[in-house]
Amino acid sequence: MTSSTVSSPENVLHTDYQRSVAAYWNAERDPVNLRLGEVDGYFHHHYGIGDYDPSVLEGPADTRDERIIRELHRLESAQADILLDHLGDVRPHDRVMDTGSGRGGTSFMAHDRFGCAVDGVTISEQQVAFGNAQAAERGVAGKVAFHFRNMLGTGFDTGSLRASWNNESTMYVDLFELFAEQARVLRFGGRYVTITGCSNDVTGGRSKAVSRIDEHYTCNIHPRSEYFRAMAANGLAPIAVVDLTPAAIPYWELRARSSVATGIEEPFLTAYREGSFHYLLIAADRI
Ligand SMILES: C[S@@+](CC[C@H](N)C(=O)[O-])C[C@H]1O[C@@H](n2cnc3c(N)ncnc32)[C@H](O)[C@@H]1O
Image (cartoon, rainbow, N blue to C red; front, side, top):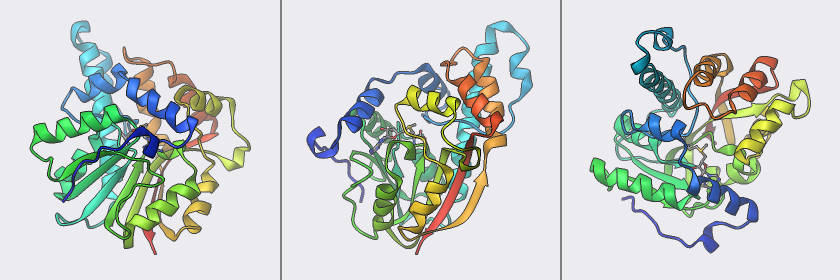
């Protein structure tokens, strides 16, 4: 049975960097996250994929903004659906972990789809409170719970999880440390999935656009090659790699024309178009 945990910041946050990331997410009230989540109660802090319906940019001006918001949210939920499509045969009695869970949109979608227990882990106490309030409202608090814990040391039992994922949350941590912890908590044959932005080793060092994204989010985007090195070093064998970059571009184009644009749209579009940055899904099995 899943239960939420109250921990103290001293036990969870070990570095000044982690404290600054936690402070960022505790203070975050960005309309691009809140207004989209309010569409149907699934709050995401990730980007969307797939083509948008161009009609949302036309039609009556008084409903245009609302229609664009709904369309951006639909693309963000489509992104979470693709991640869950790669999670394998998860059953209702299984446990899975949403690693760096944000306000929990992907966690609730996973529970809806598989009926399994979901533990969300985040270093933001504000997000833990938000997610647990939502779980109570939905009547699933016994199955979906959010914990104030560090993904580099989650405290969950070794080999206890059928599956685990990082949805746009690997760029805050060292990949070798992260995958060591993922490999520890996954059972043999358990599935790990990440969707992440990563820099392109082939175009060379970090591009200006990628550096601007890092600075905007106080994160540290890893090169593509590092994912595979760190997985191989920790008993995670890739089974699928999907380049979602072309499918990510329409979302950013629509977002750039929306009322919830944050100013980071141009660096994303530049980085994707010039090829210095990829949007990748990687699925791996614990061996
Ligand atoms: C971009 S948000 C993604 C949220 C969520 N996965 C989603 O798709 O909506 C990044 C998340 O990673 C979490 N995070 C960053 N560093 C962390 C760490 N060391 N341990 C646990 N969570 C962390 C943040 O608190 C935040 O919830």
